[in-house]
Length: 300
Image 1: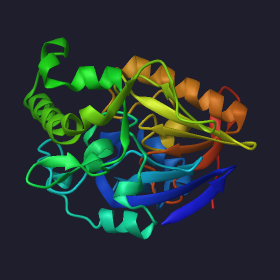
Image 2: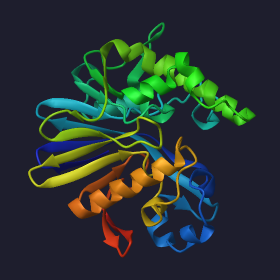
Image 3: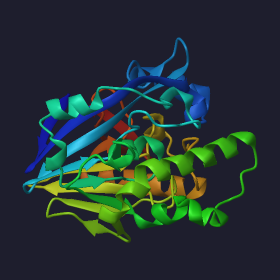
Image 4: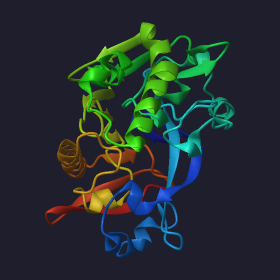
């Protein structure tokens, strides 16, 4: 567990799962030399070169701001049918106990932020109790409306037709995610568009490309600044070479543009960059490096 203070906001990281997922360039298709040339930056938290495996975390960021308890993304969840990624099919972790150890009682959570609707960001929205019910019974769930519309199975006709067997498996998986982690909380959700101000410290902004409704959460408090970038970044190599998307991006060109814009803003405003899946300390500052960007030492 990791905690730190940013202005008037307390930030606590609660990890659900951490480990190797797949070959590195299956996750971020990119030249092998990009990884080799930056081995000192990537090893051991983000890349295991001896096996050429991508290493990452699935985690929730707990924010305490203006008297509210806010969760940013809710991981995979236990006991889910996830045919699209067997590694997380029927996952069983002690995440709920770790959340409690961080001082978070389910009934005390005020807001749940889903930066986007992918299986590893919405899973603990719900729990099984004879059916899928909200894990956080008193919370408002903040969900990007564009993603809710896009992933609603009733709008299947609006999405590209699956072209391969793996596309069909992913499509089936997205339907399961919607049914067990989104539909059960819609009656207590705020489906936001354009931007959404949570309080004086926190604002949600659109960051499309990874998904249509992909979003970021900006923190600005007493001179401290941070940006929770969700899946705009999967690996530090995307800071060094923003033109490389993850394999999960729905709109590649839009994802690249969003990544560049977000990194430019973070460098110019000295925001602490906090991605959803970075292991290790999980956060860093970046600076401009000519026409690109450089990663500063990882946040203690």
